[in-house]
Length: 55
Image 1 (cartoon, rainbow, N blue to C red):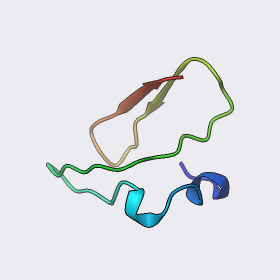
Image 2 (cartoon, rainbow, N blue to C red):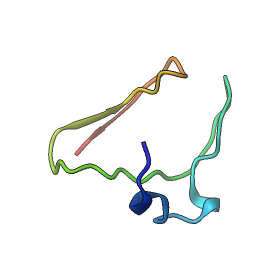
Image 3 (tube, helix red, strand yellow):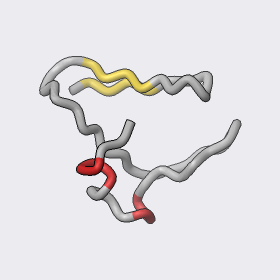
């Protein structure tokens, strides 16, 4: 999920914090992927939700 390059792109205050059930947060994430087009789906196994971005 994280690379050294993507981790250093944002200061801690701008990152999305760790979250629990029913919590909401605002922040930024860095998507470090080789593709320039397509759809990126992030569906971590530890939560029952997913996020999707068009590239």
